[in-house]
Image (cartoon, rainbow, N blue to C red):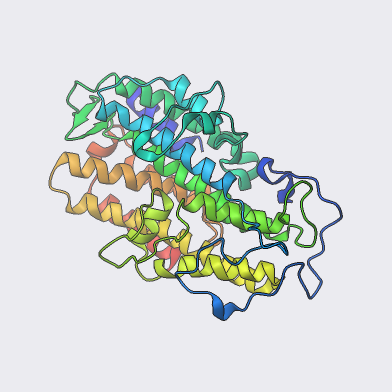
Length: 395
């Protein structure tokens, strides 16, 4: 196997909830979600509107908010900070440090610095107990360690690639192409990392963990030392990991994104025009259902959110494959296929649709498993991938 193919093989071939770190807290008695009444005042669903602030209705008997978004928002900002550092290779012509990237991934050694443009205080992240590594592929049990080591290897690939920032990319040669940085196979590694984490960290943890197994958590007992139940916290952490905004996509139209969003939240708007406006109301109603201890309604809203998140991942994968077809320059095509490959990898975390690693790996190999990767792509390969995803997700 050539060195170039071996390098890319790294990308595609290393392929209860109360035990998780952020949700592992002592409670005063065993879970019981079978009672007809909750421990909170009932909330009339008709009071919920797209402009209802997320925290405004969820209060304890003293009138204090019981919503804590810290865990989700902190991990979101860690993802922002890591992504910002990846961008320094092009933005600042910077040679990247794989050790620093891994330290940001597992929040060790105080790796975060202030980023004024993102309103990030490095000290807030460095002193937190949260990280991205331990939630990556959390729902996948034995596959989790493989997924995390794959990210580690990609950091090494990205660091090596950043040394070619003054070179020009070509078949068999790493370097810049337009404003992007691609390896010898024409793969934009920064996009593979970002999109892989959207699937393995953000989608998997929000959808399959917090809004999946996490819905079985205790809703009758206040977590010791806190003012929320474990079920309330699981739902709030999911929302906080999707967005930093009190209103997700408020005032958005099909032409204009109404709030500043990154990662999965941004792609929900871009690639799920049919339902993006329904995601925030679903989070609100599901959270009100928890207050009401209306478990069937909560599960219904969670299923809607999870399904639309998965549809977003699949639609984004198809969208970028189509952008490869419509691209008129290597720069445009390399960028499109980089994003597409990352989303195709992330399909394996679409549990509602029954997707596994074998499905996404087969598509990846069909696209760029040949010796020269991107440089060997054809319309036939792209169309075969689009057809497989479309059929699997019934799009």
